[in-house]
Amino acid sequence: MHLTLLAPAGLLLALGAVPVLAALALGEHRSKRIRLLLGLRAPGRKGRLAAVVAICLLAGLLGAAAARPVVDETHARYLRTDAEAIVALDVSRSMLASASPTTPSRIARARRIAKELRAAIPDVPTGVASFTDRMLPNLLPTSDAGVFAATVDRSVGIERPPPGGDALTVTTFGAVAAPVRDGYFTPGRRRRVLVILTDAESRDFDAARLSALRDAPGLETVLVRIGSDREHVYGADGLPEADFRPDPTAQIVKRFVEATGARAFGEGDLAGAESAVREDAGRGARVRAGSESTSTDVAPYLVLVAFLPLGLILRLRNML
Image (cartoon, rainbow, N blue to C red; front, side, top):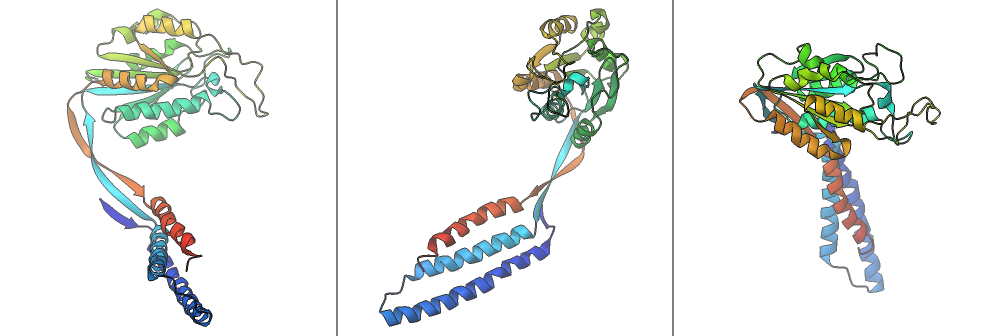
């Protein structure tokens, strides 16, 4: 752990205490003369001393914050050698639906959930895929959480890949067998986890095509259903699109679970989904895969602490 000042010249801001202290001393000198003329008793020294200390502390904290201190910490990074995971996100147009024009869409929530589920298995190499009626591997399993997050944010988008058909409902669960069928996982991994984030508004599918998910050794599937039938796709004018009507999903999810042996959760039960992903990934041998650094910006905390001496100064201003 070490401290770095990104803008060390900011420390000069602390010198702002000098003119303030000079003004305070001048004011005290004038107040003393007036008290002598009027025969008033001088206030206690404790108040004046507290004001001086508070001014110096406030200037010091603001100067330190202006210097933009950053604490860098280096942590060892470990990698599981027996397990991998793939997070597959539904990118059909229905994932644009939201509860209102100003609330996050299903795809935005899916991106957030993908990163939260990835954080639940930090030492398991995890990849990204997106699907409609076919699946595209965006990122093969990696131990780099930053690369995972960047891929989810920048590469996963609505209808990327575009669907092969032009029906209103294009998603089909028949596409999600691709990670096993097309070799998305590294050969030899004993534990494999497929996480599917979808609104489950799927066309009918051939359950036999999903037998690969049920029969593949060491593969576990977790489905997180995102959205509700009260959501709509909103246009640029903020009005619901007339062509979009939420499809009932309960039977589709039930058929998928029966065909694959997957465990299904709603987005409101994210804790349950995280627990399932951790359980499916299990525990296994780890190797050290280098180190990673994290940086913490200290300036906001210094500004918050600076309110304490500021409050004291404001309280004492009428007592001196």
